[in-house]
Image (tube, rainbow, N blue to C red):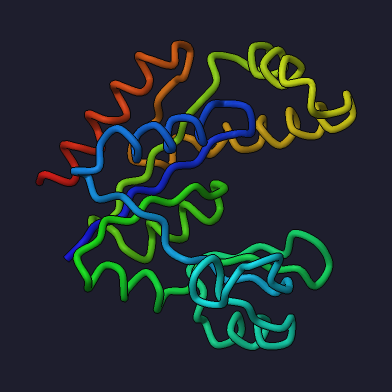
Length: 189
């Protein structure tokens, strides 16, 4: 039976970089993503059950009402993304360890559903000022978008203590080493 690793962090904290590197450098951890569900149409060569499970907005809402999602979000009006409980359970039964890159609400919902079989980790920036500097350094967002991300990050940071562990990414190498050690120890137990 597999286990779950749930990682959440404000935008610009380095979460995606850490997860990508961890999966690339440590295949022995057998960390994989579950296939998410969405109400948007497939793009390009995307296939149902491969990249996503594709549902109509009506079917997605029906599945929400039936309690089939561990977590979901309506990103735009009628455009949903979420994690199906049945998909997670299937992967765990196959012995896979799953890693999640989700917002704090989804992370806490998944942790609540799986308890001790899940490790929840929150990655914090060294400070809000440093986070603002990182977001500005990307040169991908307007000042307005950056301020929205900072406001959201401030809210997210208020929930960091609800996670099993919180790490500060003030140095990528140090944070990566701590993250690997946490996950390795959890999966080996």
